[in-house]
Structures are given as C-alpha cells and as structure tokens.
Length: 265
Image (cartoon, rainbow, N blue to C red; front, side, top):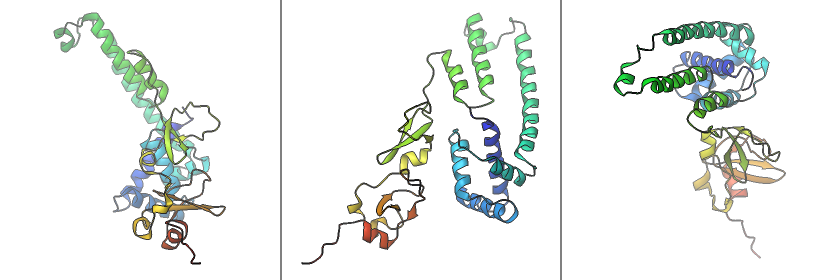
C-alpha cells in the first residue's frame, strides 16, 4: 500500500465535506468548483479537475493517485492545519484511541469462559469448531478494518479458499479502457487507477463519418494532435497523448467528422 494512503483518503473526504457545508449546491461538480474558488481566493490554487481525479481514484474507487506534498499541505491548511503532517498527527491520535478501545473489546471476548458461547452457536451445535470459525471471521474483519488494501482482503479470504484477484487498475487499449491487475508488469501498458465511469462511458469514436452537428454537438469531445483529430464520448484526457479534450464545436464536427465533402469537377 502506498505511503499515507489512508491519511490522504481521509483528508480528501474531510475537504469535500467542508466544501459541501459551505455552499448550498448539492452536485459533486458544483461543490468542487466552489472548492476551487475558495482555494484560489484564500489559499494556493488547485483546479477542480485535479481534485476530482484525486477524489475519484482514492475515495470512490479505493485506488491510489499521486498527490504532491505541497498540495496535501494546501488542503490541510484549508481544514485549519499548518501542514499535512499536523493533520496526520491528530488523525493518528484519534485512530490510536479507537484501536485501543477495539483491542480491549477483543481481549474481553477472548478472556470470557469458553462455556459462555453465543446462543446461536449453542443452538446450531457448532461447538469448538464453530467458535473457531466465528473467531477467525471476527479477527479477519478487525485486521482489515484499518485499511482496504489488497493484502488485508487476501488474508481474510485465504482462510476459506484462494486469494481474490482484484483488478483495481485499468489501461487504454485501442478505443477504450480495460481492467487489469495492478501488479501487471507489461511495460507496454500504462496503468491508472480503476475509474468505473471511464470504463463504461469513455470511448474513442471509431466511425467519425457517422457524426453530424445534429447528433454530436454537445455530446462529443475531441483531441487534435499533429493535424489528426479524434473524437470521444466523454470529457477527459486523450490517453494517447495526455492532452485535455475539448467540447466539439459545429465547425470541428463539420470539418473533421461526417462524410468527406466532394469537390465538383
């Protein structure tokens, strides 16, 4: 697991929660646009698109995404802390207190006499084997509660069978994103955290000749690189060159899409 991933996830959640409490808007985009303006006016500027990438990758998809220390410090100041380190220190203190409380509960359960087994165990005749199974599940959940990383999930599942092969990354192939294991070592693939929205809706339009102003305006985006124009079904970044996509205009659609105009002889 990447360093400080749980802390970064909690930071993003706290920042979004504070921003949502400061504006009457309720949509995700409106809230992060408000955050962008606040950071620009009172702190160091951060585009709403960057925050969206961080939030979706780390919070919504339980993945990872690199965030510079200066940005972490900036978001921490928005929450009232001097630095990200200060934010982590307080968060760790609260986490430690909770873990100690949980530890006491677990110790109390373990130290209970064996005869005082749960009623459902007695009624179903599970006996010692039943206690062992229940205890294994409880301890597995306890150890995995601190983080949702791949290793903890594997530990919990390995008791009942083989480890799960979660595909938490994706890569661009031809005209769409495809799921893949984050441990894939193929140097020809550029892996990014899984984004369920992009997996389903972000596609390159292969039949540009079918596009018209009537059916594509306001519904497509384009990338122009070295004179070549590609159209996509969703806003974002061209995976082949990293350029930000732009909304297709009537001029772009008429010039680069649809059937080619034939010159009269």
